[in-house]
Amino acid sequence: MAKPLYNFSLSGTEQSARDRILTGEVADFMGAAEKPLLRASFLDSLAIAAPPRGIRVRGARIDGTLDLSDASCRRSRSMIATSPRR
Image (cartoon, rainbow, N blue to C red; front, side):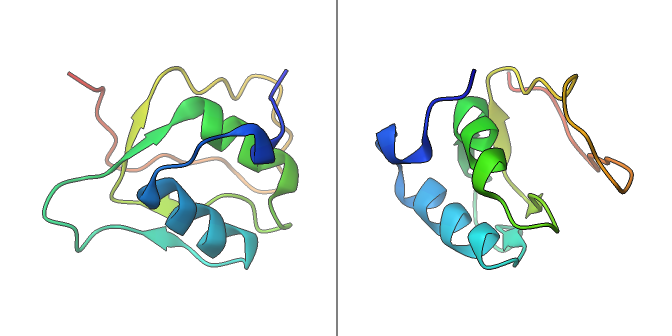
């Protein structure tokens, strides 16, 4: 079970992503010199509070396992141009 979002100590990148996502925007980090890191557990908790458009992130790395097996989506899920963390 995801822990509440307010229980996280967020990095600057995660704060930026949270602020954009909760207002329905894309958290777009494509212009960053290096792809920033977002914890899978942070994204899991953010999903509980996300607006109807869901969570949209571009140009970031996900650290940890992002389990979407219990996710219900009205639209298709997609993860484009992803690569495992090395």
